Image 1 (cartoon, rainbow, N blue to C red):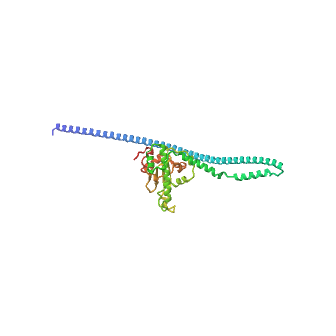
Image 2: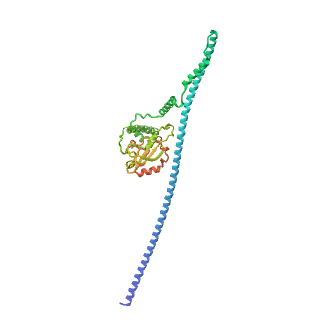
Image 3: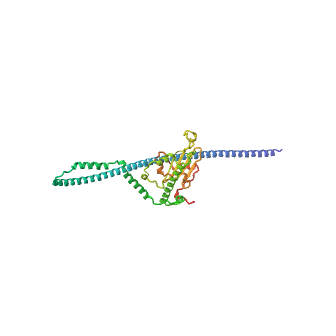
Length: 373
């Protein structure tokens, strides 16, 4: 091989080596740039995640503060309603006592006036008898003894007790019944069940809607009372219970229902209380009895229940909606349940909806917004 050829081969090899070296350097530089870009991307992602986490924590903190304020307002409202109810009860009790005392006073005044009139008449008769006796020379009975006997007889007839005045109670009861009758705007006694239900689900007339809901739940109460009276005694898990025992007991207590503040149909209130279903076993400490323990959730649309949910451990959740499952839902109105006076029973809408959606519940539609199926 000639020297020129060797030089040529050497030069080509050097050029090739230099070319490969440049390519390797370029590749190393690209990898370095890519690594730096990846580090920057990861750093930026971590910053964004940290920012998002802080934002979520801030939102959670604000939401918790808002929920705390709402719960404080609900507790304040509950105490105000409880105090207002007590005040109305005191006023009604004082009013009844005042009416009874006023009636007694009027009766005493009328008896006193009659007695005075009779005494005056006796005095005149006595004077006349004295003149006649002076003329005829006869004797006259002593006026004082006669008037005293008359006073004793009249007093024994008029004596009575303020607490035992049947007339007062009768008048009040008749007036209350008359007031209830006068307040009814619609005669729904002859309406069929299907007509009431269709009207509740389709009507836009608020007054008619409320009247239909009241009549519908009144019939439900009658039906459930009959069903409870005739149900089997040896039932295991009491499926006929539509509400906790504490609510049913509250409804049976004598209440000042006519004095309570009316709940308008636009009020949406939510409640949660413990619910123990009796299972029919005699041993209350046995495991079968524990199977009925759970929670009872209620959403009241105005005075009447709109949604109801029962959660029991080891059992499927029970979700009920008014207009579809009325026969299995609580038939009492909000005032009768006493839930507004139970401390800690009322919860937020978000708390109710979270559990409702968690157990497969659908969004709630108010009766006046429903379409005929």
